[in-house]
Every structure is written in structure tokens, then in C-alpha cells.
Length: 338
Image (tube, rainbow, N blue to C red; front, side, top):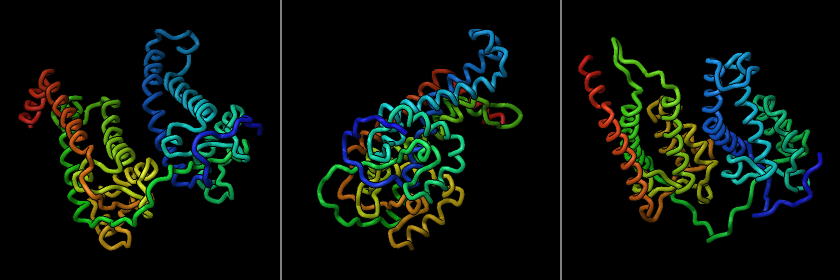
């Protein structure tokens, strides 16, 4: 498959991307596509259902099929254009991955088009093909003659062997995060009216607001750990997320660690505490999957007060808006009825 004659610019390429790195990039892209394209797709479904503001042919198509088609088409264009112009999607760029030809030249338009045309098949078979392929290629890569590689990291000071944190230190950090996020979640639920009154307490039907809450919580853990190397709890506890060799964590580790949290929460974190206590590198399940751990830092992160202030300001803003719009009275009436 022909590629652009321009060589890949920027930091040097090194090695093939691992399954773990590509999976993390895929998760970020799934969230990005959901945020970018779900709303217009569902608005199109609404317009098609009521028969307004659309061409006549669109109103004759089943609204759900029309919405799904628009979402799939927009996602396909996103992958093709990003890999052609930027060398990678948002997920790949954040995880320091690039799509290149076999001779390490930039991915051309035709190559990007071909490798993404097979993506529906690769969603199922792709991970296995990447695991067992010598060049870690999924079907689209084999047809387009492309590979996914990772970039070298900027050279810095020599890495010091990390001192991994004990479970007690990590527990203190987790408690701080739990308190902050509980306050945010309560204020968010109250402001968006996700709980409604009636004979029984029931979840509201506002699917967008309901979906946004776990996305926001995911963004907190993954974003904070990817950008700052720590959540607010870890910042104040003088901890940071690192690879086992002491290298700072990134979007790959942050994404995988965060995806494992719901599974760990179902067991009240008890298996994770045991893993941190008895494993050599003090890793919980998310750390084992991400190849990371939590190490001690020399001092409190300088961004800790600012990050706490931002979260507190958001909570205060949600509470103020809830009170101003009468939400507080509705909540009190709801609990008084029960």
C-alpha cells in the first residue's frame, strides 16, 4: 500500500506499540467519539422521528438506523482524517503512538482509509492478531501495510529506583479522593435531577446526564494521573503513579488503571489491598494490568491546592445552581415523602 513520501517528523520512533498501549488509545478514542458524535446522532434521530429539519429521504429511514449510520460514518471519518493528517487519533497521540508504513514513513490517506475500513472486524479479532503477529498488526494493518509504533520519550535526568508506597499510604489518598468525588457526585445528581420523586425512589431518565457522571469520574482519575501523575489524594499524600522502572506514568497507565477501578470496587478493594500488601512491587489489579505502581514522592505536588480549589468551586457552583432552581426543595420533599 502506498504511503506518503514524507518521513515521520518529531521525536524518534522506537519499537512497536504493545497491546496494552493500543487498548488504552482505543478507550480514549471511544470516549472522544462518544462525546463528539453521540449528541448530533441522537438529535438527528429526534428530528427524523418528528419529521422536521431533514431531507425527505431521511424521514423515510428508521430513526435509530439513521442515527447509528451517522455515528458510524462520523467515527470512520475521524479515524481516517486524524491518522492521515496527524499520524494518529487523539487516543494514539495522548499515548505517544503513531501509525506509519512498514518503512517508517507517514501514513498516507489511502493507507488510513484501508486500515480503518476493516475496523468492524478488527474490533473482535484485532487484539488476538496484534498479540500473535510478529509486527503486531491487526487485519487493517496487514492490508494497508502499516504498523503502530510508540515515540521515544524526551531524555531527562537518570531514573532513580522508585520506593513503592505501602497500602496504608495509598488508602489515605483513596479516602481523600472518595470524599472529594462523593461531594461532587451528590451535587451533580441533585443539580441534574437524576433522582425523581414518586411512590418509589427511581433513577431519572435523562440518559445524557446519567452517562456523563461516570465519564466525568473517569476523566478525573485518568486525566489527573496522566497529566500530573497523581490524583488530588495522591498529591497530598506525596505519591505518584510510575512505571516499574521509575518512569512517570502516562495516558496508557492512567487509562488502564482507571478502567480496572469498577471491578475492584465491586469487591470493596479488599483483593487490591492484599495485592498491594503482598506483591513485590505493591501493585493492585489496575497496576498489574498497566505495568505500573504507586511510588513515594519527595513533596506535596504544587498543583494540589489549585486542583482542590477547582473541584471545590465546581461543587459549590452545582449546589448554588441547585438551590437557585428549586432543586433543594424538591430533594427535601422527596426524602420527606419516604
